[in-house]
Length: 185
Ligand SMILES: Cc1cc2nc3c(=O)[nH]c(=O)nc-3n(C[C@H](O)[C@H](O)[C@H](O)COP(=O)(O)OP(=O)(O)OC[C@H]3O[C@@H](n4cnc5c(N)ncnc54)[C@H](O)[C@@H]3O)c2cc1C
Image (tube, rainbow, N blue to C red; front, side):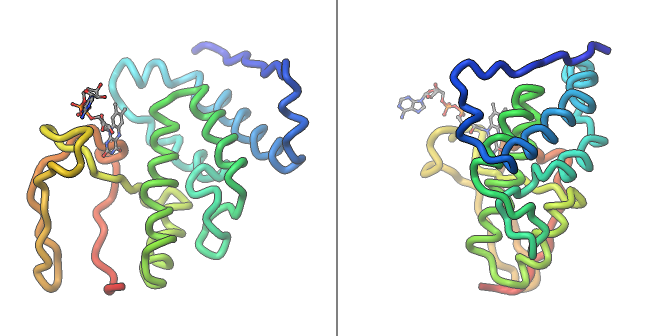
């Protein structure tokens, strides 16, 4: 295992633009990356495996839904904090950052913004704690940059949805849980 000796020189004094809270949030993320990600990630990458043991740590540093309100289990932070957390994780590993930013921006945000109250209460706290991992399945094998051409479809069967189609490159999909429908908006 290789020690992560990263130090962040601040040549342009950008830290002056940050609040004490921003720096604390960043420092927690940086320490966690050095301790729990950098030493193991190369080995996992070579084996094409996701280190599921780091999910709890991602939740602890507030990487799942940093700006989601505390009442829904989020960290209640601002967007700058979200960016700082992602920057630190990205330095350690881009894939781990994808896990966190997909969960935050593509899974939790739409539920918070467009979901009904029952959906928010059911999904957000468990997504924030890392108990549940979500994913966002846009890309299809024959239609990557062209969402308008996608062929995957679903039918509302009353008590469940029937999904037909194929997806690829979907971050988190190998470890994401299956959800059940909760009410209608
Ligand atoms: C690590 C990783 C994680 C990902 N996670 C997710 C995820 O969680 N969810 C998800 O839905 N997707 C995910 N993706 C998919 C990603 O969003 C797609 O790769 C992206 O949409 C591009 O699609 P494509 O790879 O099929 O490339 P294509 O669409 O086949 O494009 C190939 C090339 O042609 C260019 N091109 C395409 N169309 C045009 C055009 N009309 N004019 C000019 N140039 C064009 C593109 O810029 C590109 O250079 C992930 C991809 C990666 C690599």
